[in-house]
Image (cartoon, rainbow, N blue to C red):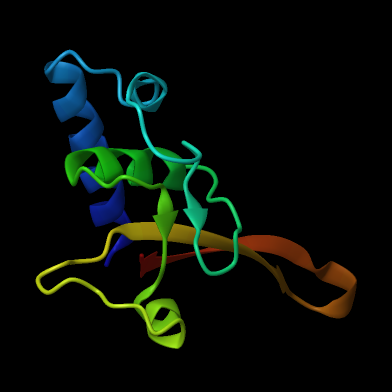
Length: 117
């Protein structure tokens, strides 16, 4: 998935919710759920951060999930979990800092990658 498409998808979802009168970044506090309201990786327990939080909140609400725990397909296979027939992943992003350049002139560059949970 191209990064521009991801930005466009997230922006479109937020605008659509705002047009219906919902404020997507505050809604989870009003919406009763089981467990934590912060999205986390089920396999590692690591919380998601940045733009991934509203992306996953919106997806959990849209699909009426009762938990904010997410897995990649490979993590589900390792845990011997099942993915429902017809389910599709939600695209989230990962940023990693890379050192680029010669030894005396290195700089940190952010590398943005997408993956599905």
